[in-house]
Length: 464
Image (cartoon, rainbow, N blue to C red):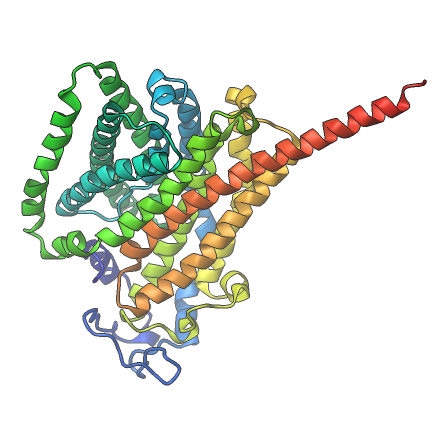
């Protein structure tokens, strides 16, 4: 699939070094011939040599990337911390206690975020996807609940489906408007939108999505005796889908997104749903006290950082190469991890900058959460160490997968923004939730062993 019109407009406005000559022609409909090693053939006119790329690398140093990323990253972290506090508060509401499958919806719904640059028509196409994916998220939640031998209740089914559809639709619409404003503002002030739009929109998106889900589910839960209300609302939203499709058809590139962009979103939703299942199964157990507060933070930090890196690599390829043709130094589909994190190439520099933000960021967010609601989170040194290790492991895996997936996607002449970011944020949710649950479990086991050792030593030291 071709890149979005907004990205093309941004690239057309970018200056190109004289060494590179005219920009390559973008022909996403035809892949280049493969060479003997299985990689696409690279003609002399398409090839981008290392010296030419150094010109672009010199424009954005690690210091510039860090300055542009750190403030949005911290603001995003504050939003994620607040989202965690909200989730910890919402889990005690009657609707969340009675309908525990609602917690399974949290990761897939907060992960349903659009691309950075959106037109009104693309927002309508995303509204179509949000409506359908919201319904599918509810179905996936119900299926996971059935597999875990939970009781099947039609009233809860209707509540889940209606709350999920409305939340996905309204959140997608609100996030679309928000991202348009952020990108326009970033361009106006001469800041790279890849560095700031994703974390700000993602953090506010978590707050918006959680709030809408809590309010909608509570409203329908309080009116559960009106049996026709939830089916009527759900059918009404689905009935609007043809209208959104008709309007989106007026813009062929956006219609192409609507036509071919389903698989990444649906697969990402399924991946995130498994993270939601882990959350719903652990959130109420005393061994995992604090799971609700920290889940949005660890999932959001990993997702934000990998989305920034994916968008930057995608922009790099759009600027310096042709869809289907990888630059010489990127032609390996499975690069050496040392090259991904330790080379002087611009994408490696940005990966190091983003990785450097993980530990300080998590420490700041953890400290703020403890200040606001310290009793909800264990602050033992063992747990903090395990938590920081989990955060680093999550981001390292995601950044490396971003490098691999963008290369594979570009080789297929597909837009990495549309195909890689949903997968990677979904994997970030699953990895973050799994690693966080493992941190709580290991901390509980280690503290239990320490308490047992103290008890044994006391018994041994007692005189006969």
